[in-house]
Image (tube, rainbow, N blue to C red; front, side):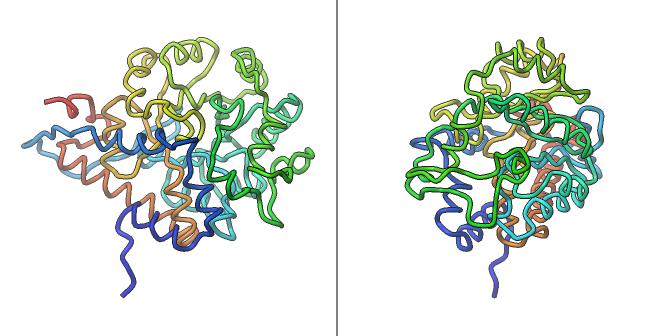
Length: 358
């Protein structure tokens, strides 16, 4: 009998069995000793839920809003690169899964499919994740294309002025296989990775991304688009405060899935400090290590409006394309609904820090 895929971990195990080592390591690997990678998941696991009883909970309502747009649950699709390494339809399958789940899709700059084709398959909200390129006109062109394609926000990644050393990718000499490219950048002459001894992606980032990122770049971006700017990759409360002062409408507490600075703290540790400083001034989301619906509830309890999941979507795509990605989202929805029932919460707005303290 075929093994039942009951949880995100089951999908991870099944995906590893299907992928080549090179691609599996690329999707799953972290920086250096991968301490932050492991701590992201362990941080949620360490938090304990002090559940309420006799709360009279009936049918739960998981819906919420992000920047004023409704989504069916506080679980969103994080921006991750190169979905065609997982399945033939790539980002198209991801967009359809997000649409079916009624949740936010965030597209990475590093797609294997043109953003216009992907956004056409999404119901919205639809956000576009952006890296700042050394050539500002390349960055401007990406923003203008995203606006024209129907993006509702720009998500600026600020924790990648360079690429953290990912030793798995170096050993595997990771690069995109023949026939795949960084599709959004191909018309701008930046669609191919260089052939190098180590990681082709690391060389691509070194050659193209702006390494001296500053708040001036955030100011420039805010002045270059009518769309709201979400800043992704914030680790400190003082940076969070300055980010809001410079125009960000929302912040994603993130350490890039443990792929940038190893020994950076788990996002579960950082989140409450940032919430305490800026939650009255902007919306706050979190990613990193979310593997259970109870993790989503804990993130909400700490003050995040929503969570974003990356690797689980890639595992779902690998196993069963659009259906697999949707199943992963529905597993997390079901687990969140169960956790809310058992914690005495009827609506996501009922979830607060009292659930994390006796």
